[in-house]
Length: 101
Image (cartoon, rainbow, N blue to C red):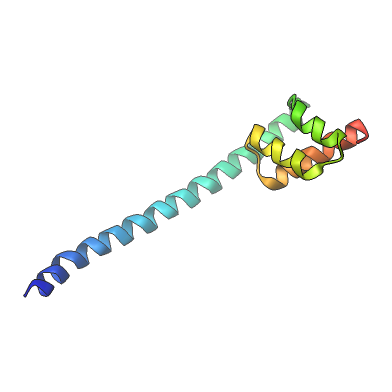
């Protein structure tokens, strides 16, 4: 008898939890898509106005680049800015190129 009670009570709870989980994941994906659209539009506005975001002052990143250590420079850039690996790599490569490192 106890197993039936557990099944009758537990199954709806499990279904609710699964539904909430998938709903939260869907909202998170929708938010990520919306944020990506906003970022692209903002970049278009900045490009149209000729506004260039200044490069952050990151002495630790520069120190690694001067020592020829690109991977630690990318890691330091990511830690300082919170950028993705791809964006940090591109930014560090631009920094190195501008400074001839």
